[in-house]
Image (cartoon, rainbow, N blue to C red; front, side, top):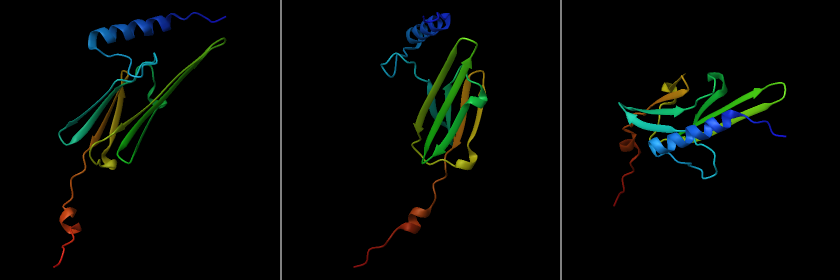
Length: 134
């Protein structure tokens, strides 16, 4: 016998409200909610904001490789007669090169903010140019 949890009904109601208020629908089409992620370029850096309610900072992993930022999180709750887990993984490709050493992240009140400074374009294009002779 499956145990009734009112939290599933609450999640469904909040998703319906969010869908009606902001026009956010089920991005995967499979009934699972997607993670709301916003990426903007501002003042020489990308700013990524992700809504991750219900996770602790220690449950979130960020990795950056080949101009792709990966956000992964796993939250588990266990009790005497139940166990629940929530996982997510999102990959965001960045349209410009980023200075890896300058990446910073903060997590407050269920919102993850990642700042990724855009790498300065090098003048190496002129150095790499090969002249064609006659």
